Image (cartoon, rainbow, N blue to C red; front, top):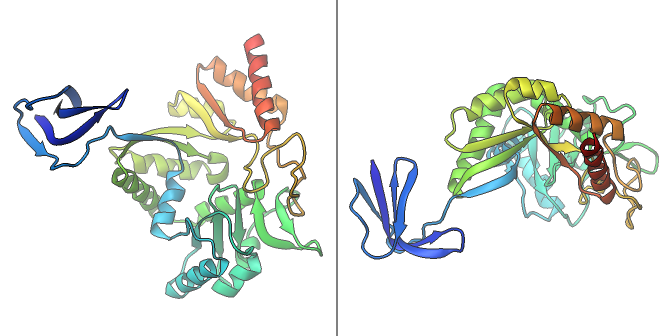
Length: 331
C-alpha cells in the first residue's frame, strides 16, 4: 500500500530542505519532491502541518519513565512542600509502594523524616531526576541492607537522613523492583512506549541498569517491548558480558557506571568538589570499578566483538575509561 503526504512543509534531512510531498510504500520511503504529488492508494493532506523525520532518543530509562507517567512525575517542581503534599495525597488514595520523582533543585532539602510525615509508616521512594540519588521513607530504609556502602547521607549524630546516593540508592531501586508486580512493571514500560509515540520518537536506546534492577526485571522488560512497534536498542549495564552475549545482544554496558553524576555530588573527580558532598559521600565523588575490573569487561567485549559503552561523568572516571581502552588497543 502506498501513501502520499502533501499540503504542508515536509522537512528532509540532511540539510533541513523542505519538500512539498512524500511518498511511502509500506514502511519504506519511495520518493520525496516538489510540485504536484504523485498518485497513491492513500492520500494524507497535512492541512498546513509540518512533517518531520521521527526522532531517536539515544539515552532512556523506559521503566522509570513509565512509572513517572503512571505515578508522581515531579519534573520542574521546585517546592519541597508541594512534593510532600503530592505524596501525602497519593498515600491517602491506596496501598502499595509509593514512587515519585524526577526532581532537580528544590527550595529546601527533603529527608526521610519529611517523607514519613507525608506517608506515615508506608514505604516510599522519591527519586532525583538523574536517578543517582533518592530519598526513602524510614519504612523503606529499614528494608535495605546498606552495610559498608558509600553514599548514605548522615546527620551530625551519624544517623542516616534517608537520602541515598549511588550503590546505596541502587539498593532502594532493587528493593522497589523486587516488590513491584511484573504486570505493573510491564505496564510502566508500555506507558513509556506510548509517551515516545506521542513525542514523535520512533527509536530509543534503553539503558537498562541490570545491576540495579536485576535480571528478573530485565526478563519482564524484554517481554514488554516485544509488543511494541517502537525500535528499542537495549544496552544492559553489567559486567556479565558473556551472559549478555548469550541473550543475543551484540552490545553491553551503556549505563555501566564508572561514577555518578554532578547533581548528586557523585561524579568521580580528580580534585574534590568546591561544595562538599554531605557526610557519607567522599569529597571527590564515588568510583564504582577498579582499573582491572574495567579492563576485564572491555577485553571480554572486544573478544566477543561486542560494542561496549560506559557511564563516565567526572574527569577521573573519563580518564579511567580512556586508559582502559588504550590498554585493550595495545593488546
